[in-house]
Length: 368
Ligand SMILES: Nc1ncnc2c1ncn2[C@@H]1O[C@H](COP(=O)(O)OP(=O)(O)OP(=O)(O)O)[C@@H](O)[C@H]1O
Ligand SMILES: [Mg+2]
Image (cartoon, rainbow, N blue to C red):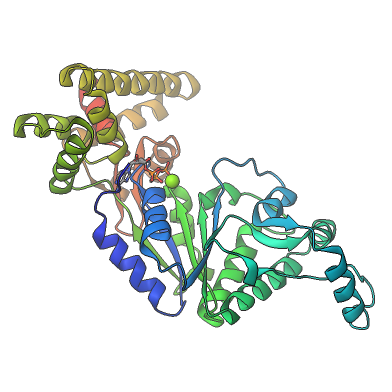
């Protein structure tokens, strides 16, 4: 499907990329707001392929519970050509006494695509890294690769999607802190590589935002659901693209009143319009949201004491009159619970809480 708009966010990110790396950037926003779609649009269609090499890691689909899992995501192994390898081995023998196999031969110059989903590494070196479990070795190797890319006259960019997935991973201490330290050295200190981290987990972003070590070293870019004006244009864009017609203003307003500016929901509605009535589609979506909220509240009641349940209900009731409220209006424990359960989205930079979607908002208004 064709990508729509986001011109402001695209301009902002392109301008960051054109400057030298100075900060770690966190791209955050509600669930399904289009963070991944935006970054993919930029790396596939908006960046000069001759100028940039992008290392893109999507942690979403991957099960990560140990150090090894993370290392295997970072790297893609290749077996160096035997003769060349032997030649190099001999050449380097005097330099590497302990481990003659510990030789890296980055093949950056031979890489044709500008988007890589793994950092090239010789198999034996990867095995060594896995065995030693020393993250400094890993980072040293990465730095070498990025320097190599720079030597080729290109700017390296790291993108980590769903970074929160390694938030709890421990090696010696938490891996995420080592990673942040390394990213600070790549950006603020060495100005070597751009780093963009994406996450839809607003509790994770809040933690990051309040993390002292990142103070003055990280910046935040919000990719929110579309505002009303843009959402109506997106509906036009999609209906012409998918249905070959325009919808009436009433129809567009009706869609917006149900699903708001959530791209994925708007896409769904327009696609379904190929063979269903608008009212039927919207009623189905709302019924679904209501059912889910109902069962959620039932679980809260069953698994917690009455006081907690009452506080959750009271917190949600605040949204009956408002779509957005100040975060501290809801007690910390309750809001963190509702954020964790993906009922609410927290924007820690603006201190604002709102339902994760218009559909959830509509369900709150109907049930409570
Ligand atoms: N600007 C856009 N133009 C066209 N379609 C879009 C756009 N943004 C989002 N979409 C649609 O919405 C879907 C969900 O977007 P995406 O997966 O990028 O959201 P996300 O914010 O990364 O979600 P998550 O919170 O799960 O990480 C996309 O698959 C695409 O169909
Ligand atoms: Mg995503």
